[in-house]
Image (cartoon, rainbow, N blue to C red; front, side):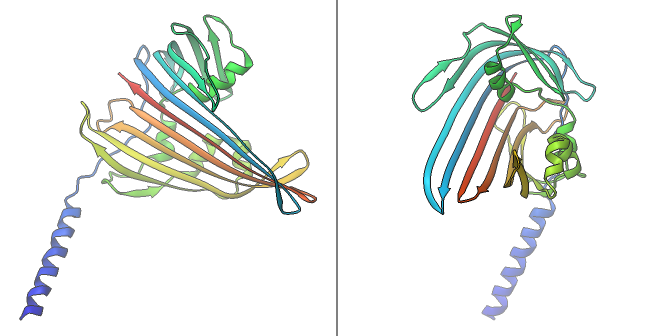
Length: 284
């Protein structure tokens, strides 16, 4: 009798769990949100870069170095023009805070109130500072920190093919991701795997938002430094926050990448771990 009672409890619990998942709402997530001309927002972004290099001679560690820095940028942005697919093509920034931090000092890269103009295209990005050409050193920082946001390309890589519930996962569109990488990098990476997950919903703000995370891996490919081949691998991760209402633009994005490089020449072997991360919020 007791066994029969326990069996009934188990069956009821299973049915309740099944109903709970069956009734879980689904959402049509469109992650490639289009930007609009004359839109304004506060850009708050942080970029971190680190390079760890180890040198071995005959299997013995002979050198170990770490280069690391962080760039913080807060700026008021105004979109001047967008591409056909809704990606920013030109925008203006007014600096509120722009600093580079290392383990031993902090440097103001530009003073508050500085005006930056930005142009974005598949061939690269161009920046001017108070209508004057930008130095190569500063351009190298800006290209990592200030991006052309939005556009349908993100959706072509990450969108699910049907409405999904929180916790659902689906395969990344690898051919579309290869287009983002560009022909040179894509040609090197023979195998790429990728998964996207609907991580959570946040109801605390004025708009309900969805957080979607994705991970792409190229587990094994070959890079060349001069004539010397190197074993390499790449892991790229994405976190995108968008309102559940598809009419509104994205609110935040985080991208990280970690690349491992192993080079051997005679008795010498070098290991490199190159990591970068960019987190951006778009506050309206």
